[in-house]
Length: 180
Image 1 (cartoon, rainbow, N blue to C red):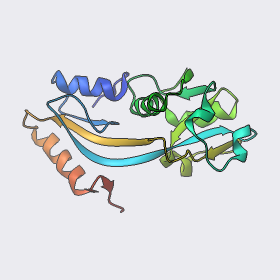
Image 2: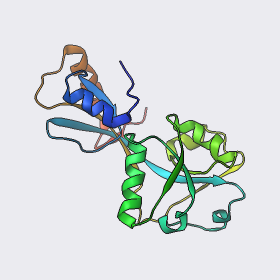
Image 3: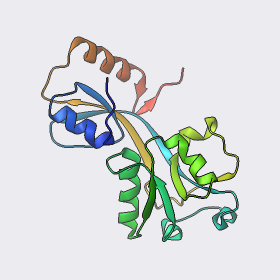
Image 4: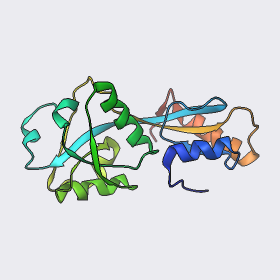
C-alpha cells in the first residue's frame, strides 16, 4: 500500500508504470488502458467563515466566488481537478492561496479566516462546524467528487488484487456504496 503525494494523477501514473495493481482514485476517467470501477460520489459544499457575506444567500454561483482566496488540495488531487474544471467551464478565475492534502483540516483553515473551501459533504457529519457555514452551490456547477477503484485493463490482477476488486464490486451498486 502507498499514498501518492501527487494525488489521483500520481496513482494513475503508477498504474500505467505497473508499480501498482490497484488504486483508489478520485476520478471517473483516465488514460487508455486504465479501467475504473465507480464506488461513490460526494457533492462539494462551500465552506465559509460564519460571518461571511455569502451566508445570507440560499445558493451561491461560481461567479460569486471570483477574487476570493481558496483553500484546496494540490494539483493532481481529485477534488482540485473537479473544482478547477468547474471554474474553467464557467469562465471564472480562481486563486488558491493555501494547499492542503488533508481535506478534513479545511474547516480549521476556513474558521481561522485563511480562505474559503469547497469540501466533500461526506466530511460534514464528523467535522467541527463551529465558526463556519456550509452553503449549497447552484446547480449549474458540476461539483461532484467521484471515488473509483482503478486498475490496468491489460493486466490480470494478482489473487489479492482480484479479491479486493470483487469485494468493491459486491459492495457497490451502480456507483453507490451499499449501506451496511
